[in-house]
Length: 244
Image (cartoon, rainbow, N blue to C red; front, side, top):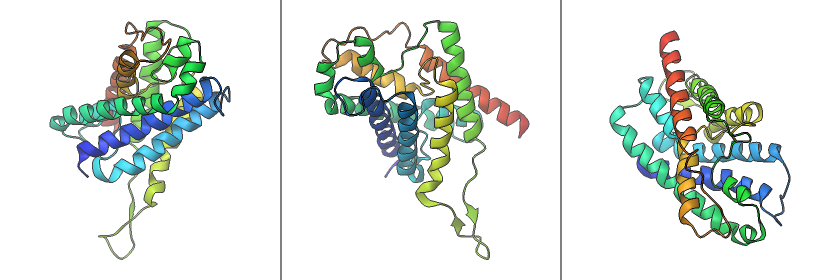
């Protein structure tokens, strides 16, 4: 599988499972209706885990433009590959949003509040204040990127330097736990996009798809979960570069 395809599939799985848990919690007459923030944050963490272990061997599982740009800024990823990776992530994000919409089609019809419908596609700040919301996205993504840069790869097997010893698919679990921590601690303000592909591509699908009674897509806010994560990722990369 090519890195481009892996980023599409990884981001697709991320949004399918991540926005899927939001839909299960907030849309009416689902089995998980009103099961709460803990379910959403845990579901997103597991979405990251699944997406990373599927894509990691083929693309490094960036599945996030902020991570791609941050790794490039840290000198750990070629700038020439940034554009194709981001394109793949946006495609995957859009496809994941469509899949969630198809899966929960009946429940969208049962839900009257357009804000709840929008929340299953993209982030909605709890208190709208662009400056504070921007800072929330910057600090959340800073933590994500900074911690990712310190993750260790597999150890080398004793007596055989050609054979790395890792945890297989469980090696992706630390990233999922990192996103769980960010969601629980820092996600209450904006819904912690910390990923432009998680917000921008699904927001576009919200605007394009015939979601019954969907309301506005709030494009006046859409720049915050794009600029904030990219800025946070770059700041984390610069600090890592300065201290390493």
